[in-house]
Image 1 (cartoon, rainbow, N blue to C red):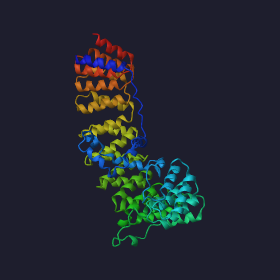
Image 2: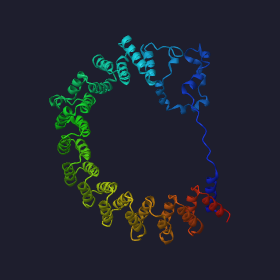
Image 3: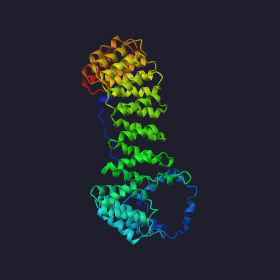
Image 4: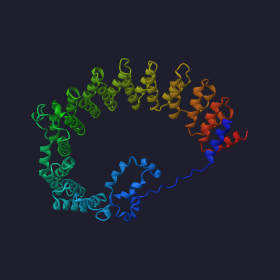
Length: 509
């Protein structure tokens, strides 16, 4: 009876059309809320709303607990288009900033892409209300609007004014970063003032300014501008920028750590004769673990024998697992026979951490070569860890060649192999396109019930007619009711008319 119900459910699922969900009508929250304000005139005269005292104990108010969590409505303050409430339905707060109306109008113009109007409105705010709490931020947004309109000279002037006149503005750091972008753009256009600015601000602070006695300047301070200036200088004049980056990465004081981390990335993005030397030095000698790891990671972009030798040395001598993982990745990106040889050697090391060996095995599978495939097939027989064996099966499946598919099928039918490895091999063989004739003839030869169940799933994932034939045969003739139900279930997921007919035939038996 249970199997019959399953068949009926499968057939009904195939025949019933999908009913589309009704469109969700979103009601504007502000408009919906304003309806509730109608009739408030009737409250006039209720001094202190004393008349509400009679509502104590009204059971209808028990649902008010559902209003908890409405703190999220505070975000409605940022919704544009609410100017209709200004000075009309809401009384002007005596403490309200007089620049608010201009601020909102400027925001609306900016949000709709009218940058000229936005720049003018933000500028008006600063000129009319220079002591407003909005004035400093308005200069940033005016500069941003001008930048979007490619009015770089005026944008730069406004940001310089913000730095001088509004040093406590909330957008000051954003303004610094924007100024660096603007100076870079101007320098590329031949602006000498911008070029001088980039060279000046790219220079690192002297180490004497960041001693432990004085305390480190926060990385929230001027390092962001310095990195932006360095990046700009690197784009337009690598010859001058790279020596500065070398100087930054040569430092060893704790206060320059954050700057060094950013400098490693910048070095990696510009291929120069010095790039390899700088990254190799940072990978070997920087006192900060993250700087070393990033330097090793970016050595993946340096295809030289020296870089490969350095990565090999890290795998052989380092005890820092994160650093070793970065070295494995860097080697995997090198298109060098030597790099692949190093990865194979590490994957075969029984004394290496299993999780790192898994990484090496994975990346070998991403480099399709006869040497890698032969190595992995041989490695499988030497392994005792299930996770490593599964990783080998997966990596060989990624190469998608006939020899590897035959190997996976051999694992699948080998009753001396652990059942989980057999199932993995069968699954990946099916996913990588092994001949379906091999799979279809396998079901009757399989003695293990788990393997038969796995085969049913493998058939369900293939789109050939022969795969459906195999499921139909199992649904009709399999003596094991549970396996038969599995086949019936997967037939119910098919859109083939033959599957529907088979299910109806089973119902009518």
